[in-house]
Length: 305
Ligand code: FDA
Image 1: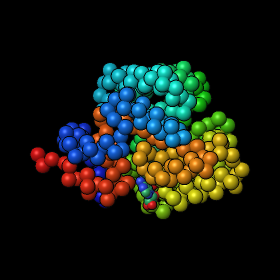
Image 2: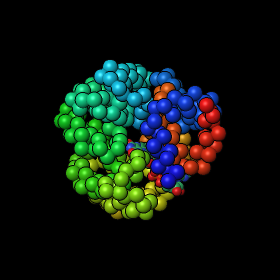
Image 3: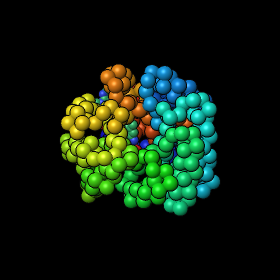
Image 4: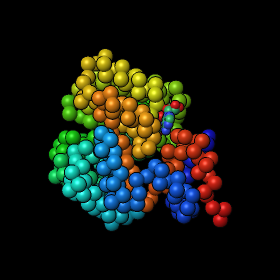
């Protein structure tokens, strides 16, 4: 219940403006977000790379109401990729992109063209792009755009959400050679008709999907902080005889940093999702929905106006 309320708030621009103006909220956000701009993102990425971690950077864009907004996001990523390359941070760093920020809800063709430009900039910089997963109404369109992008840029990564009932099938489709697939639980409020809502059912689906990806020919990217699922992933990697270069773990910036270090020290590739930008409100609320104890501290930062 609390999770649903917080996630609904995560999609409210009005509440976003209110919360973003509270200084305490900003302090909390600064724990989970690299900073406002590319310079801050690069500095945080450098620290992670120095610790032997790989990175995927995500720009936190505001709601994309116009084609111009979408092109601004595209240009931000092109700039970021150029700066990553100049700083020698590629290929350790790649980028994660939300198609909605590139105009998917306005015009799918526009989103595809903007994503193509970001993929071209990534290729130029010697790295790749992963398309973040959003709510289930966008999944078909996202996977179609992914398939088109992969014709020219085969390393473009997919994200699949274990809570969606369809995802086992999508894993089978995408478990082919060269296919990079991030598997996560899923972070949106979804109806029972399309998604598992019980935590145990989601975990079981995660394991079934993991089995498909680990036994397949693609490159699984296991995105979770859940200790049981991490242990199962380590086990499956051994079972399916995958070397440490043939899959990776992914976690969010400043979440379970000791576990990130442990996995990296034992020879695993660990990629940290590093968000930056001024529109941190929705991202922060999604993270707090996952960790309610932090929400209570965060709540004290919301002004009473
Ligand atoms: P979950 O939150 O279910 O926690 C399970 C257990 O893990 C907890 O009970 C606790 O024991 C432990 N745990 C979790 N977090 C902890 C912490 N911070 N400290 C200590 N213990 C902790 N979603 C989406 O819809 N689209 C996307 O594109 C992405 N992308 C993405 C990238 C990456 C790199 C990650 C890690 C996650 C995403 N997600 C996402 C979010 C994802 O779907 C999911 O909502 C969160 O990762 C939370 O689920 P977990 O599997 O991490 O554990």
